[in-house]
Amino acid sequence: MNFRNLIKKLTIVSFVIIFSCCFFISAAGAAPKKIVWTWNQMALGKWCDNDLFGKWLPKRMAEATDGRLELHVPLNLVPVPEVLHSVRDGVIQGAVAGTPYYSGEWPIGSFHAIPGVLRADDEFPAVLNNVVWDYWEKSLKNKFDIRLMGINHWCGVSVFCNEPIRTVADFKGKKLRGMGYYDSLAFEGVGAAGVSIPWDEAFMSVQRGVVDGLVTGLVVYDSMGFWEYCKYINKWPVHGSSCAAMLIVNGKAFDALPADLKPIVKKVLKEAGQKNCECNISKVEASLEKLKAKGVQVIEPSEEEYNKCLKQTSFVRDKWIAQCKKAGSPEAAQMLEDIERYLADYRSKR
Image (cartoon, rainbow, N blue to C red; front, side, top):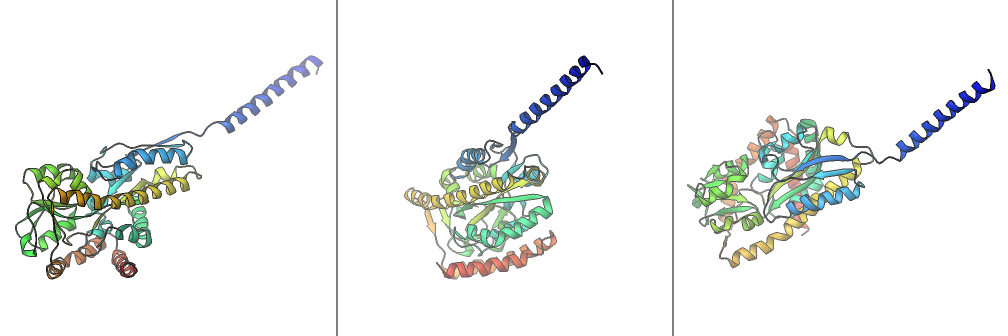
């Protein structure tokens, strides 16, 4: 080999080595690809939800992940009854989902609707974090490949009606919009008609007299104007004091995240749920005082009538357990026992 060919070959080899080194250095220093998730939320009046999930959460997630995960958070992109299935199928990557809308195929999520179980607004987040989380997490993963990431709730739940309901007998003939299957059962137990109406049509139904009232949370009742047509807040145990919701993510979308992002995403979403629960609870008292000043009346049934209501709706509990078993959640009976044991201790320490 002559000297000229040797120089030529050494030049080519040097070029390849330098190019390779530059490529790998460039690749190592390149910014990770940004991931974009669509996160669905409901329009909920003056609850904290839309501000927290629409503004705070995307900003917090971007900061926590150094901009590697971006949340696009539209309102009502997916109809409420289809949110669970849209997350399951990957149509959207995540959402805040109210559990009553899925009481047919996932009844274990609707324990809060059993009359008499939840009596105060702080009980739902307490019992979810200390008892229910593990049950729900396993169930959602096994049935839908959905990951439970956080909890949420709409508190101050009562029966809001255009007439006072002072006795169980006063329910007779009333047409009332509930938040799910178990509300309708409870209404039937006290002589009312449970009317199924989509949330987006609830206000119009109250305004036009299609129904006499509805079950919802107090802040929504206040901020969305239901009080103009339903002047009475009737404190009956046809539903617990809170309506449950959860923060959920598609299993494949979560599994596809880089390993270092997974614990960060879980932490941020759990923080968002806790923050929103506390915020919603903090708004109930102010809404109540404002409503009273506008002439809205709070009707507290006597202890005798309250207990009569519980007795006449006690079958809802048995129906819920049976429906859970039928839907593939036989663990629900044990979960309810654990819930009531925990709440008995929780209340004793107040």
